Amino acid sequence: MRERQADVHELTDLELYVYDAVASVDTDGRALDEIDVIQIAAETGRDREEVRRALDRLVELNHLRSRSAGYVLGPHDWAP
Image 1 (cartoon, helix red, strand yellow):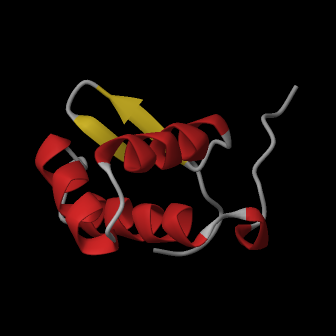
Image 2 (cartoon, helix red, strand yellow):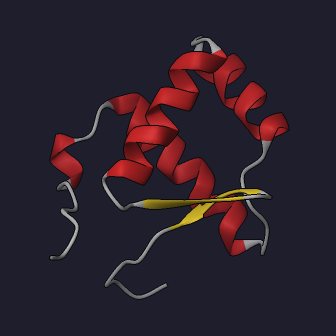
């Protein structure tokens, strides 16, 4: 069974911001790490736990992958 991917319209503003942050660092060849989580929290005025919940939801929705080095983009069907 194929995992469900939420339409971008189903994501919160924070989830979209977090996804964009992961995409930005992933294109540089690295994973979003703890320092990035702290930075996102500061930039958005949210606490780290809210950012982590957004990351976890994006993983659950198959938009991101969690790796030992941090978070990277999940499978997608659009051009880079």
